[in-house]
Amino acid sequence: MLITDIEMPMLSGYELADFIRSYGMEIKVIFVTGHSGYAVHAFDLDVLDYIMKPFSKDRLLRGISRLQKKRDGRDKTKLILKTKSEVFLIEKKNIIYIERTGRSTTIYTTTGDYSSYQTLNELAEELAGSYFFRAHRGFIINIHHVKNFSLYTKNSYTVHFKHTKSTAIITKANLDVLQAQFFN
Image (cartoon, rainbow, N blue to C red; front, side, top):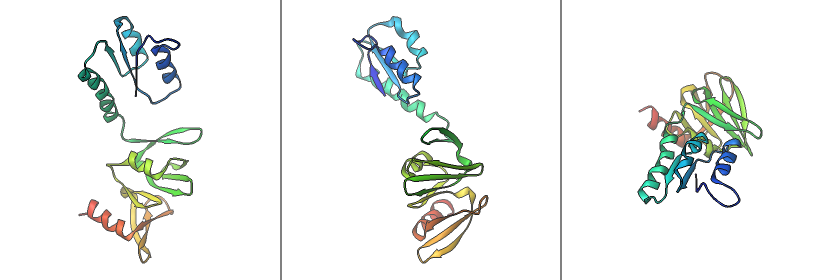
């Protein structure tokens, strides 16, 4: 989030907001200004709020809270997956599992596989609160696509899925947590 005045020396707030928008940066802008005549043009730039000077702390906090409301209202059915040169919108329900090997992450879906540099922690945060489960330090699984578990070693199981012959690993401790969390 960026809070800026509209009239500044060297670079105006409009130019800054236009730069942010034109490069697709995910930075929301709040204009704080003493000039009401700029409001219409400001909202053409998709600013988060337009606050007139002088303003109270409460008024600024209300503007900032709009960002949280916008985030809460966004489409939570899709995962935004970033690669080096592309951004994909993947339906979360189509994700079978995610695997991290070395510096690469592969997302296995019912419609194909995607490679990304995003970490499992970043993806787990994006998928939190749904039907995804961190099965192992190298795997996140979608419990809706799990067919069965089979013993792999003394402390881990192989996860078999409905739509692929590929498998994942889940630790015995995480399998116990999974059963308690989703199946009790």
